[in-house]
Amino acid sequence: STDTSRNVLISRPEPSVALLTLNRPKALNALNSALFGELNAALEEADEDGDIGAIVLTGSDKAFAAGADIKEMKDKQFADAYKSNFLVNWTRMSSIRKPIIGAVSGYALGGGCELALMCDILLASPTATFGQPEIKLGVIPGAGGTQRLTRIIGKARTMELVLTGRNFTADEAERWGVVSRIVREGSVVDEAVKVASRIAGFGRVSVQAGKEAVNVAFETTLEQGLKYERRLFHSLFATADQKEGMAAFTEKRNAQFKGE
Ligand code: HXC
Image (cartoon, rainbow, N blue to C red; front, side, top):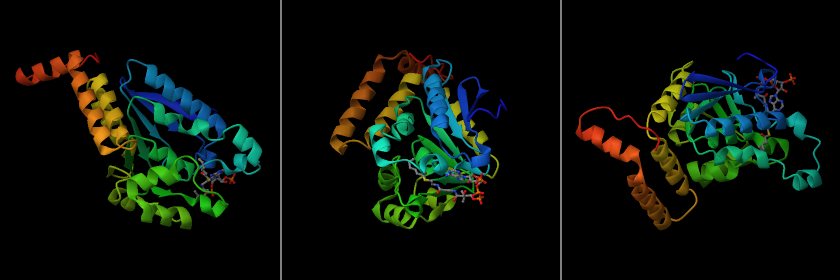
């Protein structure tokens, strides 16, 4: 679709993959409430759609997203922000059950960087530029930047980024484990769709369980996390896909997963 009146374009590059493209080119995909309304609706629709196994989220070559829309935000008052719980809608993405692969080119700054950090797998173009520049605007990250970045790259680096507002490169993001891979310029969406398509070919229950189990590592102790993993592992023996997957191996053929 090329309808520029919409802030999020939705397409199906593969029958099992939803591709969501942030589309406010004139504002470098600055994130506003209308865009988040559309993004959340598209994510929830893809999560409910039985034909879809994984979701790709991307922006443009120039910008994944250059942050929260400063023009929309600048006149806010504390009381309104507090009473309306401003930003509550921004983290809805973290409750989606299907894997979300982020494909980052260009700027991923502020809320754009935080949106990228909410993806389950991140791929970057060599020119991707990340950063939490909020300090330059007299504020701090508000959609998880101080928490998710610290867990991923550690305290010293996060403190430097958050307190100086300096950007970091795709190379740094890869070295620090923010992105899983840097791919050839111009190929990041294709690569992300390939990853999504591969994931969508596996059993839906085991894929959801894998995502759930990894996320528990960010929420709990090692002992509790290991127990959680083991219980989920046990539960997968109640699925037809486990029987099919292991039968296919012993019969030397490809598995046909049904998501049951
Ligand atoms: C509103 C934005 C914007 C933003 C860019 N634009 N970023 N509008 N909010 N975050 C608009 C510009 O105003 C301009 O529109 C158009 O997009 C193109 O931007 P330019 O600045 O002309 O482009 P360029 O010179 O290439 O510079 C790119 C840039 C710069 C380095 C990314 O735009 C920039 O510094 N943007 C702000 C980045 C930022 O501070 N992000 C954090 C926001 S705070 P006009 O119409 O003016 O020409 C945040 C808080 C999160 O995210 C907290 C909770 C989520």
